[in-house]
Image (tube, rainbow, N blue to C red; front, top):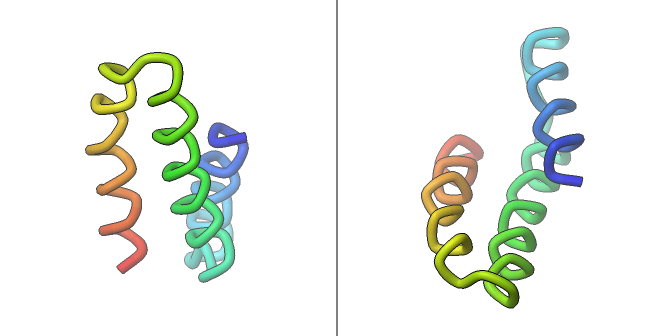
Length: 61
């Protein structure tokens, strides 16, 4: 799911010059969910994903 959201955001940005608020919000939610789901299985991997999730949220702002 995160790969599809990330790819669609990139496509929208370069195609339309704006990813739109819905696409960026969905990407942020997806990144947060990925960190949470990964934390259940591999806490160390989850911590490694936090900088990317933070970057996505920063890029949205």
